[in-house]
Length: 175
Image 1 (tube, rainbow, N blue to C red):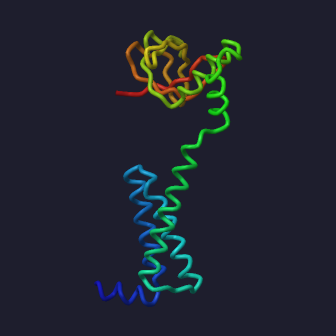
Image 2: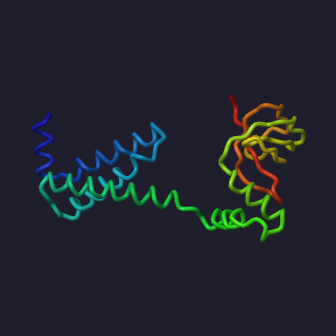
Image 3: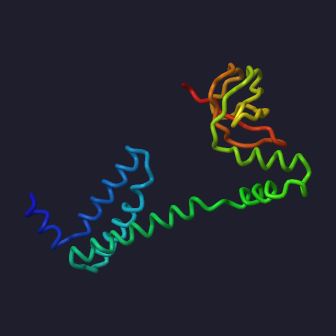
């Protein structure tokens, strides 16, 4: 088995790298972690070099793979943590709230809650009710595929958006 891999590495190393990429993608899908995607893309790139006929020593391929994987992961991390334009606008409003009308300040606060988890404080009737996040109450509307019209108090919800003004759009989370 090992001897076969050594022969394959000498003759067509791109297939080994393609297999590694496949394993990384499977790991990312099974574990639900994007952490494995940078190494998968790196392995595909190394495999692509092999398909182009650019063969290197295994240790050179391994070094290139590792450096490319680390670079891609750092780039992905830095890009994914950069605030988007809407977030920057909301932060600017909250940095100096006296310069803005109260509705704009409330909407900026609401926008920064998107993605967070809240708890219903009232019955949601006709998909409308109130939730609490960090001790502050917010008006909210149930939304999403299969959203119920009713939701009892003390249920967890995820904030998925902001509708008019500072009214939150939420989706129920099932215990």
